[in-house]
Length: 282
Image (cartoon, rainbow, N blue to C red; front, side, top):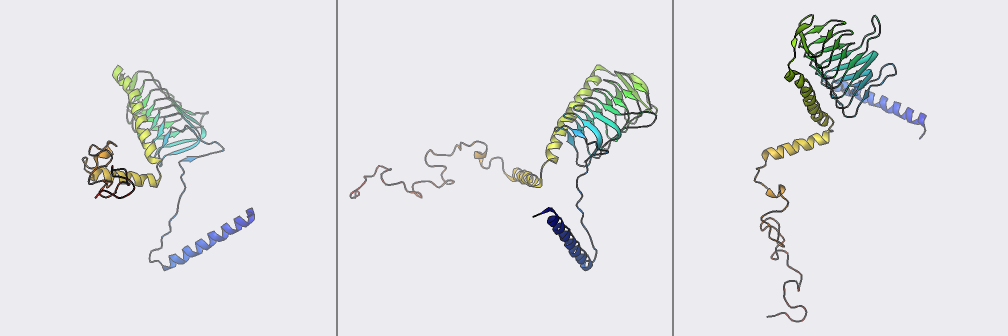
């Protein structure tokens, strides 16, 4: 079937569908139209398509737009936005973009991309705007890092803090407040925790990625297995734990469970020691 014929048939089918839908709406007390919206979590912009490693977890409600590169094992959580429209955004490995966080770029008073290193933890509702976050740094929930500011390796910005344009949080320091200022030096344990939190978030994201990747059939199977496990006694069907059933009698199965006993399934003539051929013993 040629292309024009297929296109014409498709248009006619859509028109017929709309006509049936409108007729149905007239018969309803409260008309309702269901729309199926395609996923829009990864979008191109100005010819640039996000480059996302296959191991990255992108939540169903997150959005990654335009000139964005996301490295191995990173995660963009629920409601977060990473928008590389007027410049580029690079995100390293095992980095976490928290729930409803926003990562932007800028083109005001010169180009300003956003560079985020590896094993960086960005808290929920944080705003990362045209700045640099070096490896193994952390930005608390609700904090803001503004144009051309820098958070160095092993540095921390406290929740709710605002790091104003051009400022730098040196390595090993904690900054807090509005505007953010130096508070104290981080302890060795706190610095080690920055990496541990990043790894823990990566492990949790792996679980979410597996769950959100399931189709409805897999979800139904999981639900059935969960119900079965919840209702079944742990002592029921012990053979499920070990294929070798301890109650099995070799050659006879499990009495009362598997009916392959000679009383119900007679053995072939000659296999039980009885004489073959001629007259049987009386």
